[in-house]
Length: 252
Image (cartoon, rainbow, N blue to C red; front, side):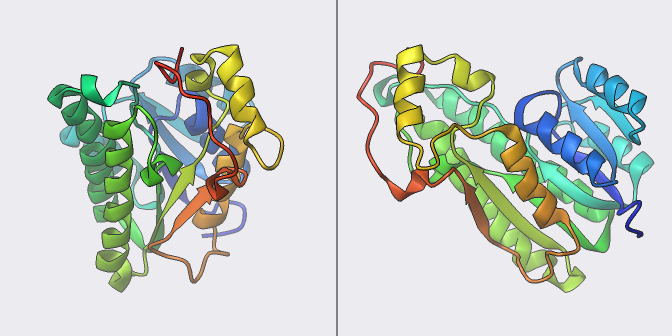
């Protein structure tokens, strides 16, 4: 690999929000990027970035479709970086949660992450990097028990992968974002958004670029001695200064 072309990165959930920010940063870092999403708008991102000179391939795919993922990765191999960003979320009072809510969250957020990581590792150079996007909610979150549990599982998966892949010098880490300015934030009431803003030690809500910077570091050759770790990127919110007012719904 050279500084001009550090390798090939495979990014899931890449059409918008955090995933889009990650793709834009990795392109700027010089990677060839393979970006997938379940949304057709992933192709719009690809067209935009190719017009700017990026080396990017986009495709519509479901991270649970092992055969489709394997075919995509075969065309892109060998891989140097994998970013597991695709996930789903919803909010429900604990008393209203169903087994279907739990199964869907784990099927996408955990099994999907596992499938991408396993297929990718089989096509990855020794010395590669795998970065799983978890969530600060692994420490607990109101009205999101199913989501928090699934992201806690992603943390455990990350740590075990780091052990199993260490003989190949593959570093595996997770990033746990706090509140980030994506579509999910805008489902909340203006009052709740302002309340959340008041809890941010750095005085602002996170941006996709903040998560992308963390990905850029963990994916880079500068990361020579970090593996099996969870990097919390939440502007200090996890220090626990203050609490949100209770509401019937976190998105009310």
